[in-house]
Length: 328
Image (cartoon, rainbow, N blue to C red):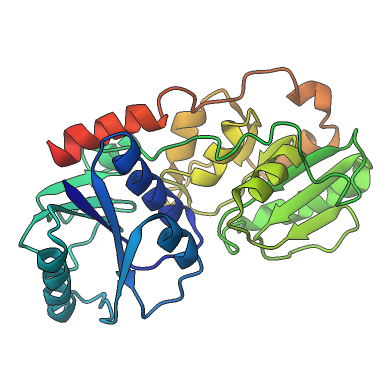
């Protein structure tokens, strides 16, 4: 069986990381063939990684968010015929943008919404998004795993961080560390606690300080593992919350606690909180974040079980779910 895995772009975010894992384990665990399909009209910083591991095809047609996608649909149907594709899998927002090919089985795997069912299988990326839309449709979780062991390696020496320092870090979208009230307590905590450091990977700079380090985005999994190993915990501050957060999972699976806002606002998605439960440290406002940071210590963080993702989100478990929901 040949399955095509489609994303609108081969970018640098969690969507494409997850796409790569599904395609990889579709071959290694399920024994099917995988092919990647995406657009040549958008930047593709992860193209090389996909081309290294899979046959990768790029189409020139431009996706239209108004649903006028007949040219794209016809191009994809041609690819389906020429490549003898059995199943077309698309990881997407969830809207019916009318580009899915009709000459094979089609799968819409929804990230943000589940109110416009289309395709032969319509499913969410987690239980939270399915429940948010009434639980009418199934879900298949993302795969969470340690990308590479790198158990003892970190960046402390390279970044001139003392071995006994408490290091908080984050990565994700450059503009998604955007919960405005967190910046002041972070600055105050740096003044109060001389043993506190922050390391931000792929994060817009918001405060200059000698104990705040910024690192550029990387696709190198060993570098990313060393970055997470450098940190004692993740600090999370996304204004609209998370439906399913790959970045928090990448910290948690390495037994790093997540410091996050326990927000109750209507705009705030609590998907990450539903998974983390008591394996996180929560703040509710600027004062509670400062209180948490001002005396934070390794003794408070080390030696506990912070991993909220073990077992359930393994490749074997998720690909069994993938097979049952999407293929059979």
